[in-house]
Image (cartoon, rainbow over all chains, first blue to last red; front, side, top):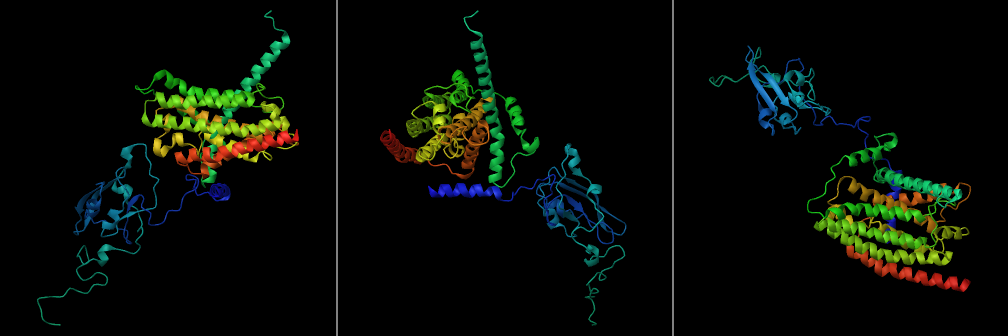
Length: 171
Length: 325
């Protein structure tokens, strides 16, 4: 019986507690930098696009909402001719970001993407690409990768020694 | 012309006007309780509740009403149609009838019956028909179980309610609610009749089956109990009927134990509204704070604890009244 009275008293004391509700449209909640929201395509520090059209994000996507078409420029570098994300399917799981070998695809702390027309939820490459580096400043895939590509030969990348000639015994 | 004098006609017109005014005020108060309850629950659960429609969200009531009127008014094909339609009207009718004898101030009040308390008890007993008929006519197991529970609960708690009021009647020497209020001019009944007040309030909660005694509509076990099959405005009538019940029990508690309109400085009506409002808020607090007992616990609590206390209270009060006389 006393416990009932105690419960009533404790509930009454909640009158003076701070309310937990965030009044959303007026008061924006804090979103941490790693929040999984709207997907963007980032650029490397030199301003070139990072995506190499490897299709790993598309493969990793559990709802198949990413569609990439590969193209190759004159120096042999791959890039996406189209990069399309259907956000009406996307579940914001972040697997694409994890799969990406070049940190090109990234999720951002933004979820306000409501549309009245479903077709508007399909974002093309021009809608997705941003001008900055996103969450990975200073990272350039081709600078650290061993691959030879447009003007950079094997062994010329950062922290990389020149390739060893396995056909010779000379030191 | 009709054998009435002009005075009688004026009297009649005034009474009719007063009745309609009280009816409207009570129904509007009950409708506003939808908003009051949700806001208060919000306060006690550290959130806001409805605060978007109109100032402080008060127009939520209007929005809810519009919504409920435009809902499909569905009568299940297997239901007993006539009874199904009448059932929700009964609870509204009986609860509103009970308001007829409630004296709001010295002058406001529909009628002063010399059997006022008995009338209130009779009307709340008739309210049982609403839920049991609703449960029966729905032809649905859950609805029937809910209806049976309600009937058992309401009939049991009616006993303690009546017994707890006997003490008040003995002190006032009258069943008339207005006379009871006037007898409390020296001291509110809650002081000499504290056990009776507690029993009356608990029985009142059980009578209108509000949380924590809302077993008839225990969502977790009976989906929604007797109003499982109801929708649209018929469900709305059960809903408003419940809120009317809260207002009624709060008003009765005020009248019987807290001196009705009596109070210093402020006009009588303000005192009445303040006291009744306090108990209405307490109903909501109870809902926010307490858990629902098991059905057998509810019955055992009534018959093994409340009934003996009520009987002892009546006996002691009677002895004191006789000794003083």
